[in-house]
Image 1 (cartoon, each protein chain N blue to C red):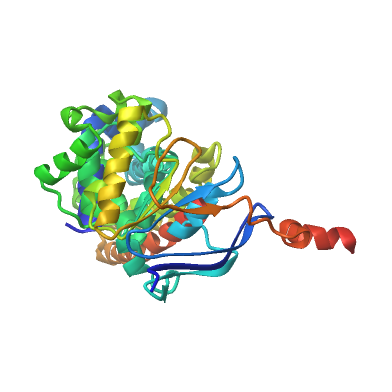
Image 2 (cartoon, one colour):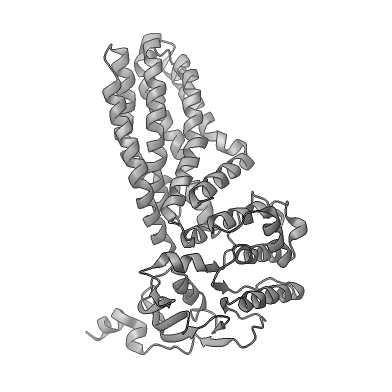
Length: 224
Length: 221
């Protein structure tokens, strides 16, 4: 019984179909890598899955329930790390994390937050304002968010390893492995090196729409 | 801690970190009103007639000053997406942001109002209704303004557009707010005006967070 079940998913952005007919399903502990060249729609796939963009067609089911009809359970389980790191630069590292933990109803104790920071190697910078962080450190703080707001059931990670050095990538991979061992599902989009053992591959670029789909109304308009 | 309290304490913490930046609106409120005696001349009677209207107009403008940043910064750095994806409704988050905006800009204006009443020679019987009207009416300015701030998220030169959107929506608050003071000065009971102001504020608190949250979801698509 798959936990996440995606059927015939299509995404339309700016009047153009990015991908269509995407099917996959993931069970506890599974991982998937969204692959495809730049602009193929990897980020859009994750945004559709997260619920930021409504799907053009198709359905996304979580535990058998349509996520658009029953959003609460899905949102409680889902953690999204997008392109933007989502950091308020005037707050300190730990204050940023504290807010997310509170918003996602996770433990806000200093110990729990410091543990999450340690998992991404930021524990020594806990009281530094976030504006002092480098690009890679900001990325790591963004990735500390799903770790700090466990238990989740699904992580959607958009290019998680951008700007990260090798030791940090190893730390992130370890966190993902631990999360999967606890039954979590991970979907990541990446062009950078990221090793997810036994990951299913979702080739977004291969889900090529037919010309009518790709051009939609514009195609019909041109014919008429 | 739920989404409302978490967001409220976060926004207040940010305001404290930014320090002077959040006080700019109040300083603008006081300085703007100080220009009127200089421009109109120190004619006591004339100033007394204008005082209520000037104070209220300055309150509207000062509220707008900080309003375009209500969602803009969170939208730009990606925070807004994460707020929208949290288990609790985005409406709660928006309501908390509006309340934080009022606590940082609206409430200090109420506190600064007596200074301006003094500068503008407002008759003593106008003081209690002025403070009551500002206290009751100014939350509506933050909540109504949030819809406009949400609509301009992502737009270039949004600040000007937001001002044009918000000012017409502020007219009822302005009429009843200034009306309460004028009524008291004229020897009438200002409670009808205050009740109308209260109704506007309650309606704004109930409805505006929904509308603003819907506009924000649209902006994020």
